[in-house]
Image 1: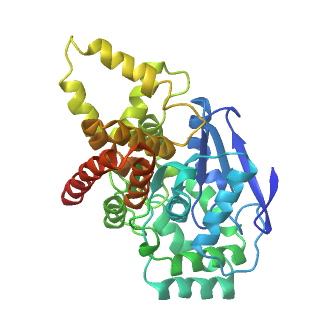
Image 2: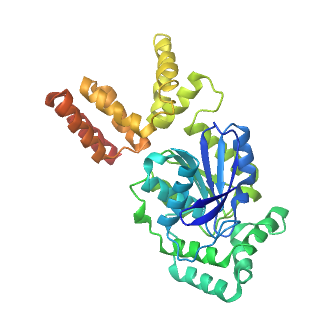
Image 3: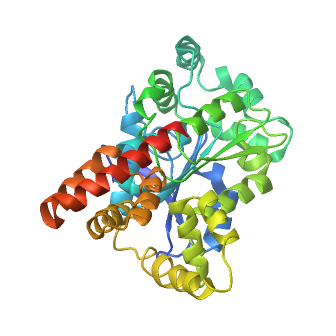
Length: 386
């Protein structure tokens, strides 16, 4: 379908049930939405609502005159979610798509449930290399850079899928390519570092020369609690050349951060509990479980995590804020400490914790807020030292 979006006409494809959890897939520079075909099919079969746009200037989308910025491209994607009535989505991106996804999470943390970032980076130096590439395209069209680009995209250019990628590249509008290349040239890691806190998986091909494993590790280190996956014998765009490995990584990410459609309340609750409290905490808690607390654990998983935290009416971040306020007001210090630690996964900032505790002081009393403030300060200090 085609939609009016932020001043241009965008081409968008949707797959899967309309009522499924939304997954936004963002492609790489010089390709189009079809670069995600294998993974989109797998997500749709699993019951997810998959939304795939052609970025501005790519595929069948219009190519407005540039330059473009990463902020502009992120707002395109957020506007697309608005147009489809999607309040919150899991966002997955390859290369520039991954960087756009990070920008979205920094701009509007309540709109991004999780991130899967494939073969991307915080920034893409050196600027002069991008300018040289844009100048070459301006002089000779996409064919002027095709050979050099393909060497970085795949390991085996003889594969039918690699030839399909080359056709995508050659059919890309030079105006759109140059606009997005400008965004990559000018983007800076400082724009997102410290501002992305949602559950994240970083995936990188072990032979990616464009955004090598060191760049992926920098992304991992910038986002608390990030999972890290390396795909063997993969270059910059593994969605075709290493289709099975990429699909497994994506489905594993979705299984970690969202309940599987059709899952029981306990299964759904366990998935959300892991995403909010963290894999390590849940593993320690489960290891200490015994016959005495098994019924209580089942009640919490099903009744609280599986039936309350999974409801669509509030974003996970909003539920986190409410938990902090209520636990502080009631003086439940141990649980408060646990949910302060969970803010690294829910996107709640220290400034927001301070505002919550002011509300507690106003409506539940200064002594309760003062006690909670001491717990929160000590816990945040521990988190910074860890």
